[in-house]
Structure formats: C-alpha cells, structure tokens
Image (tube, rainbow, N blue to C red; front, side, top):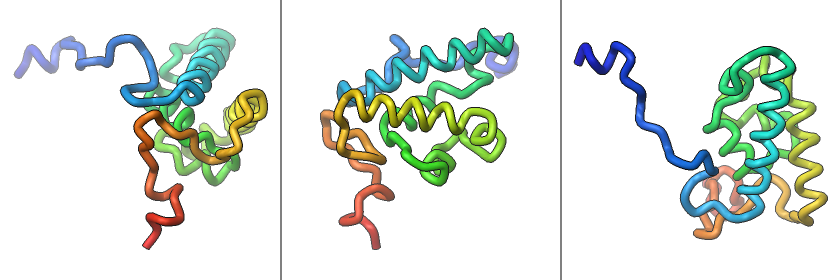
Length: 125
C-alpha cells in the first residue's frame, strides 16, 4: 500500500484519444481541444492538465456545448474555468460545428449511439 502512495502512477488510457466508441466528429473536436489546450498551457507556462483535463475535453467533445450553461454542466468546468476559457471553448466548439456541418448542437453522436440522458428529451422524466 505504501508503494502505491509513493510515486506509483495511476493507470492511464493508451493513445490519448476520446475513448472507445466515439465518432469522427467528436474525435476531431477533441483533437482541436488538445491543440488549443497545448497553446494555452505554453502561453501561460503551465502544464496542459492545469488548463483543463483530458476527461473535461472528452466531455466537451462528446456534448459539444453551445452555451455557457451547457459548458458549466461539463464536469471540470466551474465558474473560474468558465470565466478564463469559456468564451474560447464555446467559439472553438461553434467553429468546429459550423465547419463540419453538425446540426446536432449540444451533442455529437458516437458510433455506438450513446446518448447522454440529460440531452435527450425522450429520456427525461
């Protein structure tokens, strides 16, 4: 147990992708988010994960938030991150959606048709 606490690395996903079953649109947006994060981190002299985490980028890529409220619903985005990066993130998502013709504002489908219940009116109580 002590060995786990003293420097043992946590398991990580290999490849740095969005995850199993994610479609091309979300994967492309995720790549754009990674480039944006790297540029912001370099400009601020920070490590990339300090800007936003991989998990947060994955959620943004899959949900494709279009408003500040939708972005705030993404785990890892709070008031401070929204203030610091919200406008840029929303602009990046909107630009990606307009370039790739995504009419599904608020969510990019995965190839396994995974639907986030909060985004599907048919699954609402």
